[in-house]
Length: 89
Image (cartoon, rainbow, N blue to C red; front, side, top):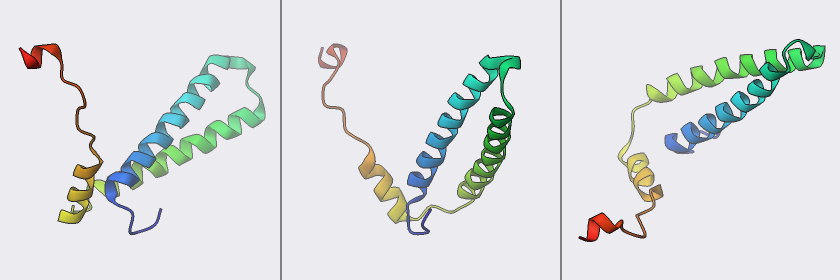
């Protein structure tokens, strides 16, 4: 990712990638003994990528937040558009 991308965007992208890898791994594990050599190689590649993602996330956790990145993160949070009935009574 580019260095000027906000940290929260990087974290969201890495988290999404982890979710995709997890889904692919679930399919792999369900196949059990019926997996091919190619599938095993892809699984090993996904394991390596997960290690890379974990390292990247650890580095991002150690990165200090700037006021600009906090401001941008607060802008991305959508306000509630409708209130619950219990809130109005």
